[in-house]
Length: 103
Image (cartoon, rainbow, N blue to C red; front, side, top):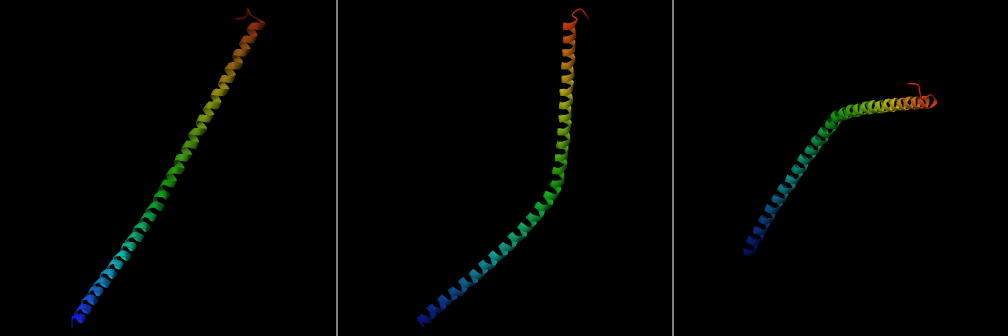
């Protein structure tokens, strides 16, 4: 009788352990399902954000390219103006050397 009670206690403990294990495994599967949902939502949000920002980045790049062209044009114009001033000064200096009394 003592052996049967002991076996019954061990069996009850094993059944309880199996139920706890099943519950733990079910909890893990539920956690994995929630994790998958969160990752799917995050991926969807990421893609949406990248689409929204993609257009913004393109617009910023176009603005930078525009202003870069404007600055380059200004530098080129300034360079040409300085070349013309230098050429004018050279002409003035040459004419004074050739005819120092002409003002």
